[in-house]
Amino acid sequence: MQTLYKENRSALDEVSHQLVEAMRPEREARGEITQSLIDEAVAVILGQAHTEHGGFGSAPKEGFGASQDADVTPDDEGGYFTWTAAQFREVLDDDVSCELLTRFYLHPAGAMHHAPERHVLAETRSLEVIAGEIGLEYSDALRLADRGRRRLLDSRRKRVTPLIDRGRYTSLNGLAAGSLIRAAAVLADKDLLAHALSSLEYIVAARFRSEGLFHSESVGACAEDYVMPADALIVAYEATAQPRYLTQACRLVEEFQRLFQDAADGGFFDTNDAVLGVRMKPMDDIPHPSVNSIAANVLMKLYRITDLQRYFSDAEQAIRCNAGRASRAGLHAGSWFGALQARFHGWTFKICDAPDGDLVRAMRAVWGPNITIRYEAERSASIIPCSPTECRPPLRSEAALDNFIADIYPGMRQR
Image (cartoon, rainbow, N blue to C red; front, top):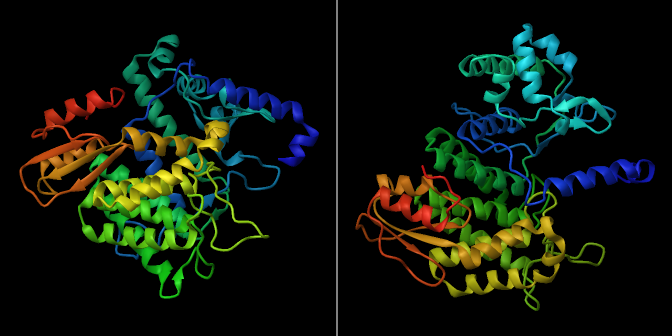
C-alpha cells in the first residue's frame, strides 16, 4: 500500500473516489441476498477454508482455517478469482452461453484497475433482461447460465490454488462458527448447525486450558479471542436452547472483563499487557468487527437473557467511551453503530414454548442482528416480544410472529 501511494497516487485516489460513490445512499442497490447465495458462501467456507479433517463425516471437526490469499505469486494480484473475455471464450464452448455470461458477468465495475482486461465477476444486470437482448427465452437462459457457471468453476479449480492459512485461531473460529450457526438456524439446516457447533466446541475445548485461553496452539490470547467465541456461544444457546452454551459464554466474558476492562474510563483494551508501552482500545472494523463493538453486543445480549444489571452497565460504558471516535470513523465504525442500534432498538423474544416447537423454529427463521432469543421455563405455546422499554402481548402463531416482525423491521422479508 505504501508503494502504491508513493508511485501511483492518482490510481489510489480514483479507487477511493469510486468507493465513496458506491457508498452514497442515493445509489440504487444491486442484487439481493438469496438462500442460494448463502449456500454458495457456506460451501466455499466448508470446502476451502475448513481444515483437512473437517466435513460432515466421522472425522473430527477441527475448526476453520484463518484465510485464503487471492494471489499465487507477488505479481499475480487476484489472478485465481479473475477472468478475461478470452478465458470465457475458451471455457464456454458455445457462442450463446459465452455471449450470455459475458454480458452477465464481465462488467466494467468488476475490472481490475491495474489490468482492465481481467474482471472480478459482477452480477450487475438481470439475467432476464440480458436474455431478452440476445433473443433467448428466460428458461433457456437460466439453464445455460447454470451450466456455464459449473464449467467456469470446474476450470477455476484446475488453477493453482492460492495459499490457505490453516492456522486455527480462536478469534476467527468464533467468528466463523457464529456466522454459520446463524445461517443454519435461519435456513433450518441441521447438518450445517451440527457442523458449526462441533467446530465451536472443539476450538473452545482446545484453547481454554488450565493456564488460560490461547490464541493458537502456543500463543496467548488477546481480547478478540474471548469475545468472538463468547458471541458464538450465545448464538449457539439461541439456536439450540442448551444452557451449557450460555454458561460457557458467561465464563469467557467474566474472564475477558477481568483481563481487559478499563475500570477508569470504560471499554476494553485489546491486550492484557502493554505493547511498546501502550494498551489500545480499538473500535474500528479493520477488517473484522472491533473488540469493543462485539463486547458491547455480547454484554447487551447477556443482560437481556440473564437480567444481570452489571452486563448492561458495562455494555453502555463500552458504547459511550467510543462515541467520539465513532462519529469520525464513519464506515469503519459500522459494528459500533450496530451495537448502538441494538442498545436502543433491539428486541428480546422470550420463548415460552418447547425449544423444538414450530413457533420456535419460525422465530429462528426471522433471526436478525438486533434480535435476542431467550428461553423461559414457562410453557404457554407463546413468544413474548420485549423492546428496551416495554413488553408486548404474547404471540401465539407463526402468522402473528410474521406480522410482528414485518411491523418492527419493515425491510425484513418474511419467511
